[in-house]
Image 1 (cartoon, rainbow, N blue to C red):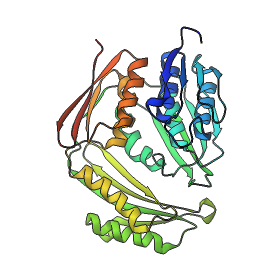
Image 2: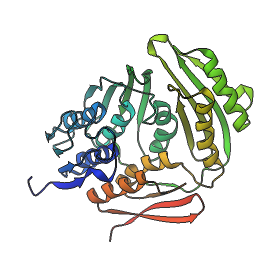
Image 3: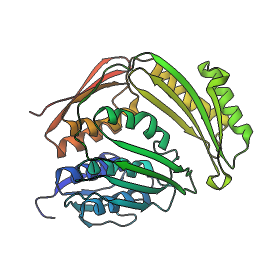
Image 4: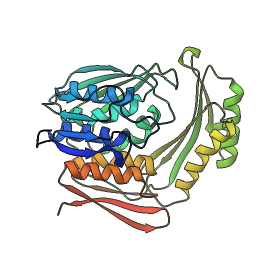
Length: 342
């Protein structure tokens, strides 16, 4: 391996280590090699979703890549110049469109002109944030940082069939720091059950259980019946809109998982966050690290230091001259802030 390649060990985390490395490599121009990709997972190496992210990143920046094949546990990536354009990528499975989109967005912000991106695959699956989370929780915060982007959900895609489609339009932008210490008062909460080729009683049970657990009024509970050809699939989504931030909590109908259990999963995560003083939950926290690092400043409070947060910080600090300060303020309350590099 050429000496100018940064060397990473993917065993520190899952696919996010690779995705963050791809984003940072494209933006910084730093080539990298990675071994032990997803080594701790039940199916190590590159799955279809990860391979799509690699090949898409390579196309956006004209990278030279070695090891880009299904099941590969090693990869080298040497980026070139980032190009604006109209890009179409198909995962070919229910692998997550949203994670591929999050991999590419930082680079497209550094492109010389507007870009459009179409991604097909999974939009709603248990192993990734649903498209609604990006639209309602993540992108609004990025817009506060200066991002001009519009995300459309053209078609839902559930596991295991996939077949969903997202469209993103994004302008070049220079990110500004974001400080998110408090979420403010809760302004509105409402829940939606998505049903595609799934009996209506499933959604009714989910909404009834969630409404009772969180004391939601009937007018805050909504059915969304999707065309059967977008299924089979079921998701329960809870939106919580506060003065400073919005969160989306989701769980997905799966074999051997009752409707009541799906609702309990959503209620547990939402209640844990609402009973804390944290501005964002662990998932949104994880996805704010990279934008804040690229902005050169920012901070937020969250519930806990998770392995995902820790490994993502390690990757970011390897590529960029930044450091994160992580301070425990109390029970279920941490402040994560970017500080000048030593």
